[in-house]
Image (cartoon, rainbow, N blue to C red; front, side, top):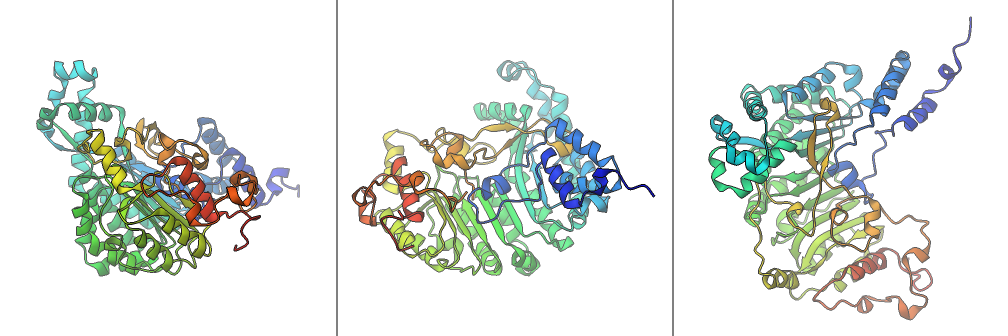
Length: 521
């Protein structure tokens, strides 16, 4: 009997390595304790493969049954679906094929704004004055989207397909909800912001869309008893969390206990303190039940920092397995940060304090001094745009700036002109290449080595440690004991303002003491 061709004699492991040259293995997710985790695994949409890569993988799978099975591991490890008729048809098709569905590890749900007002009058956006402002748009396309949304919600088609899919995804690890908008919706949103009277014709809103989709995803996860342990959303509406709070806590207990990673960024800045205070009980229920938590991030709009006490949301919970913790845009006392760090000093490897402002009477040198001296395993710390509450408030007052009203869907970091997040044209490959815009963080690990606190890189919320073998010359320019901070008193903290150069030095001082000048670690 003739032996099989050479390539068929290769092991599956070697064939997987070959596939990595066609398309990187999507199963190789970034570790939870890595600083890059948040942007690349939680808040960033899955990359769309180049057309030639998709074709090569497709051709590989057509070769034989064995190659088909190996290729499916790559092709279906991450599935992205948009809330649309076309998206649900394809999702159901994948769910109906167990040999494909079993490979899904990450599910990204792309949710558009909902048309919630004036459905019957949307044709009027075709009036001459609108066309002159934003150009000629196909009103029939708007009507189709309005009717599709209405039909999907009324018939429960989305919930039916989601339940079927989540049940079929037996290896599911991570669910993320992302906001998406196409070019025409973007133009319409811009026009609505300029013309208040247009809300009588049509209103696009994020809160009801986010609430509805969070509710249906939650129900699908519960009914399927899914093994999913990670959930993230970079633009979560507080109203969507309120929907979950309306359910009996016991119904979500198993889901909460399974959680290892939770990353939420709330994008609605209107009366945010009161909205989050209303959710305090839900946070206590979730955090108390999530005993296996390894990574947590809770963030808010940079220009609308939260003023609640830290423990109004975290309730003095101690997670025995916590590796990484992050918050963004919060006015706090130094002792609040120290107390939370102290509870997790034995396990914590990463700490993110983006846009955190200290209140009067608190100093960053006290926070950093504790982290430097007492955190046993801390590998990295992110202090981008930290500062002091008084200076932040004075800046707004001196500029005569008022915090802007939130656009439809709520404010996010993109509303701060100094912290702009780009719209990135990302075709939804799993939906046949619809041309959508997805708002997401587009930074990479190298952003932390720049001298700029503004622009897209400044908004990276990623959970990359400094490598263990990083030479000291990269981070230490002391050239002698007197030039390098020996203690927190030498950090130059004036209690008023933190420059970008300072915060970068502080990050390095906390986690990479000079080996020549400090033998404590």
